[in-house]
Length: 188
Image (spheres, rainbow, N blue to C red):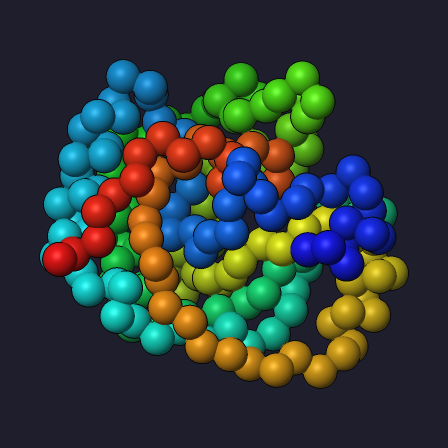
């Protein structure tokens, strides 16, 4: 992230308001439905031992957005991740809404803009980025496409990790997890 910030200073830092995460679902919902969404999601997560899972990060990636790209690290999809993603998608289907504006996103006076590609990405997350199309990843920042092409050409040393927690977030620019709306307890 620091290297990417040196390349594109107006990118984002992984900090208290830009949380590193692996996304299961991005969608638009009504604010009034959030308490039910929290309860439904918490019930599903209580049945999963996701903090015991071993996930493997295995390569860099980026999504081009004009002269820049959103960079990250790709995680191997596992049967557990795919199952959990589908359970959450199915359970939250009645609460998803198709259309939203930039007002649905978390912004600040210092970061008031939402990149135009983010709304259709979130709107079309299911099915474009779920099931067989799911590419779990951790977004790491923004860089120029030339910088990111050079990054992708470098060797990547795979590593394993385990999820530490689960939360529901209000998204910010580039689909970043900006405002934690509800931390969900892990199975005890």
